[in-house]
Image 1 (cartoon, helix red, strand yellow):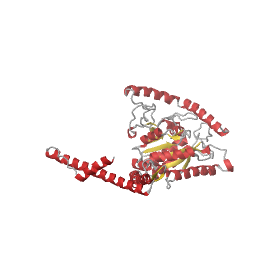
Image 2 (spheres, one colour; image 1 turned 90 degrees about the vertical axis):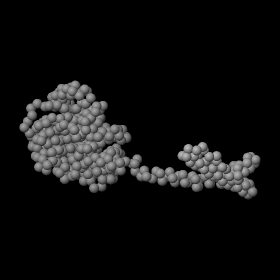
Image 3 (cartoon, one colour; image 1 turned 120 degrees about the horizontal axis):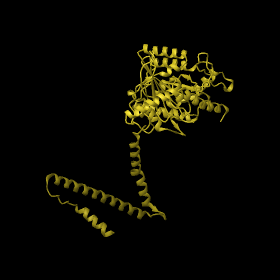
Image 4 (cartoon, helix red, strand yellow; image 1 turned 30 degrees about the vertical axis):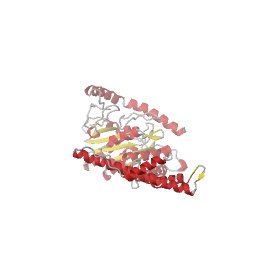
Length: 435
């Protein structure tokens, strides 16, 4: 582990302690309401973070809940109730002002909802980003491991506007795609328009590796390549200052985003996706400006900039909607399935018209001890021809017999006695005598 990685491990552990202190009161209130919900719903459906919060302000109104936990019946995404966005008051004053201005712009466009989907592998900071945007500890965060077991939607209401963040587990488990995680993501986005997708990766990873490619391919198979048309490349740990190759901060960011962009184009098929880049810094040890806003390595506050870009693109882009037909086309197990019967027919034809004839000819002309003489070969050919003719005659007789029986049954008569050809009977007796 490098010195830089050790530093980020310390950051995550430190952030956990800070978050626990910062959101102690919210968790206590949430716990009381969760107990009430369990009694009311016979312990079948527990809505995380549900409850009424005291001290409603004029600009903030509502109540709500997020998705149900594993093992309990989950309500459909469109039935979720958004709760009051209390975390908005915890943001720096300048950030609050920016947020409310952006929400006002969306309302002017007759848009009252904004949904953001977070995707990426484990450890890139999806849950921390959800917490940072909402300024609430809505998702648990643990250092060096995933603490998100399923996809969850957290909805908050402010000034008559609903902001929803869909937090997701890492889609890669070990060195294989986590099918259960992808199914949970599909459940959360099905029937719900998604305005923006943040495909997260760490700014300090320095390269695109095989795991990134697996995640890109897995997301494309589960959600379809159109999901990339609404995607931002989100680079976390944005306060990075130790840069390689004497690059400036902006030059390094563009190089890192460019590498991810190329990988997405190559492995998703979404050649026309714009894929703008946003920078994220969730650590409580990040530098802050005079207004208390966390700064990136280029000394710019990241959260207002992220929301500005997401808001602007949400007004330009058509929201992503899950389309099962597109997903089926992307399923490699279902591509070119029409070729399967053709291949089977080709194999059967090869056996009947080529392989069987070759084996038959090989049995006629010789054995393990050498080739037969010409006279014996001719006799074998004639015998095989007679056998085939007798087999055809037998099948004809059986077919005729079945036909007569069917006709008799329809007329209510006794089955007719089959009539055999004398030549066929003589041939059978001759064969018996020869044997």
